[in-house]
Image (cartoon, rainbow, N blue to C red; front, side):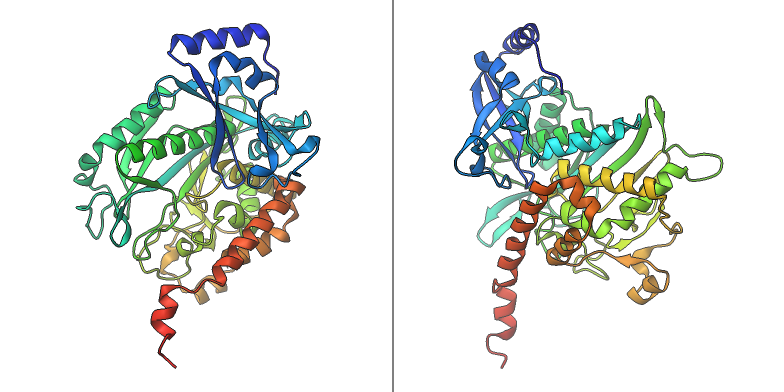
Length: 446
């Protein structure tokens, strides 16, 4: 990451000022994939780009930094290429920050971790492009708790519903226009498979830019939903009787202008096959990163879910244009269908790259393509074909992560330890919680 010269700082400052910007949002992403930061006057752009905006390290989730000494300070050093004026916040511009501690790239900064994996690709002359597809719910707080923001959104099968979209047009259009104003190429918006669920898609980009774009999308959606009296939610599965929200990754590997995953006359390219082999081989540990909450495993169910078709494959398989497989292969790319809406895009992408490179280096075979509907197969039928099952709880996924050196290596020693610690605590708190379901079934049963 190159340093920015004084002339570059002045040019960027003039450009932003000409767009009406007076304040910077120096934004970084914590271990949970939540945007954090502070407001900095535009006059101090040079400080943000050179030394960084300062934060108390131990006040940031997942840093593991001490409360005293030189390593207690976390600096968010701005990436000048990411500075964008925000149409929904006139006068403000977001600039994405990388974490630094004691003058060095911080080994538990999610964006720095992704940079390290991208550097591994670059050593081979490769780059990775991703198209991240965020699904989300638009909710409101009612007398019975959270419910869809659109009270008329009651169809049993609401996919692509053109009645609900106009009712939410004000929010959806403002969100799409705001993202376009920041340079994202938004190319479609639709109603998804659950009541109150939507998806906005923007074009693929290099892996770091895609993760940055996803964080910008979340910031915009939270702010605009609140302005419209709604709650923007990327909770994986807020309603037991409705499908959950995925965050599918479309993935392609490049060497300059050449896509290394392009189809060949002989069938699936060797690099694509081995990359997928690595993703499948490490899928249990990847679960911890790509499905990182207790609620995630209400979406990744084996067998029939309460909501019917969940569109969330829980078996380890791949297949051509097969949405029932964990990896759906398409011309020149594959779709990784494991991640849900709560995943940290930097950590998920970093772990994906590490798994894929491990597959290439070890020439891992992903097994035969699955061309049938895997949702219709019983667990016994799947087992007979050697098709494994993903972890069915956060506890299982964390155990898998602890035994996977490749995925842990992608997260790094410091962040991996913090991630496991935090997620073990989350799982423990959940397992000790007494739910309404338990009271209903057991309170007077015995």
